[in-house]
Length: 117
Image 1: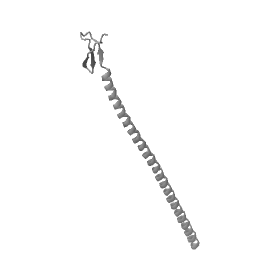
Image 2: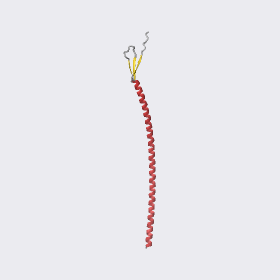
Image 3: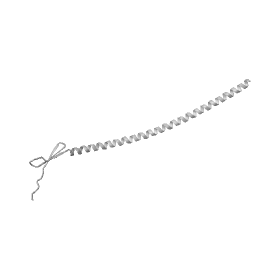
Image 4: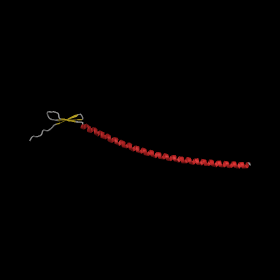
C-alpha cells in the first residue's frame, strides 16, 4: 500500500511540477507580450511627440518670420506717417512763399511769378 501511495504522491508531485512549469511559461509569455506592447506604444508616442515638436518648430519659425515682416511694415508705416504728418500752409508772406513743416522741420518754397504775355 505504501508503494501505491508513493506512486500516487509522485504522480501528484509530477503533475504539480508540470502545472507550475506551464504556469511559469505562460506568465513569461504574457510578460514578453506585455513588454512588446509597451515598447510599441512607447515608439508610437515618441513618433507623435517628434512630429508634434517638428510642427511646433515650423510654426514658431513662421511666427518669427511674420513678426519680422510686421516689424518692417510698422517701421515703414512710421516713416510714411512722419512724412504724411507734415503740414503745408500758405501764409500771408510778402514773398508768397509756401511753408511746409515735416517732422517738426520747416521748409520754405518760393513761388515763381508767372510771366505776363
